[in-house]
Amino acid sequence: MYLPISWIYHNIRYQHRLRGFQGVSDGKPVKQATNHPKTRQKRADSVFTACMSMHASA
View 1 (cartoon, rainbow, N blue to C red):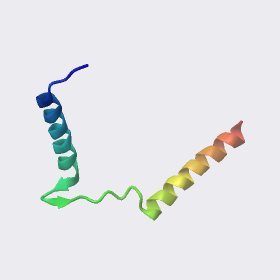
View 2: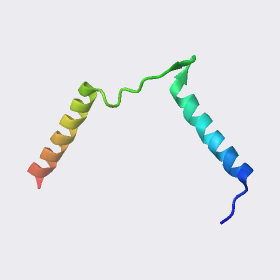
View 3: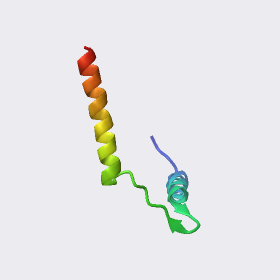
View 4: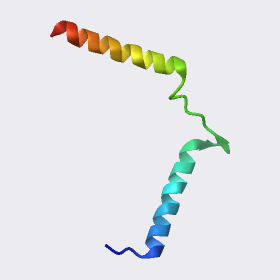
């Protein structure tokens, strides 16, 4: 399949702009705390609890 260069270039720029606006607020980058140790531990505990309750009910 052949795509014109201008279409590919426009698509790349558009995706980059979308990503850029998601992480910037008032010119300052927004830090996403998805990998924070406390958050990670809470998530692990909730998954473990859900697995144990499913195992106990089976």
